[in-house]
Image (tube, rainbow, N blue to C red):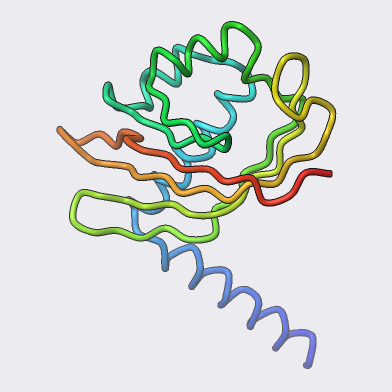
Amino acid sequence: MKRAVLILTLFTLTVQFSFGQSKDEIEIRRLDQLESTSIYKADTATLLKLWAKDFVVNNPYGEIVTVPQILSFIRSGQIDYSTVERVIERVTFTQNIAITMGHEVVTPQNLTNNAGKIVTRRYTHIWIKTKGKWRLTARQATIYTVK
């Protein structure tokens, strides 16, 4: 009996969590993870589809950079990771704007700063929906720990 109640409770919580997310939140979470995977794979074609044309980043090194600069960093190996894990902690919506906040754990390699170390960063993303599509418009990342 206790086992049946436990299973029913877990099922109910799972269903509530799944249905508690809006269609837009599910999409933003998917896109945020796709962006992370695309950075890891250096998939610039996908990144260009996800990023707004005027995408801007306040990077972990205190620089404000734009799409051409980021693409140059990727191509030159200055953005290169052997591992990337992004954890979305919160998604907030205001009209056609979605804000994702969380943390990332990356292991830079090759020419990337802190190569071979494990770097944990806090991040914030601003997504804007225009013409029915979400585009990442701004990013801010701050290094939290380096080990």
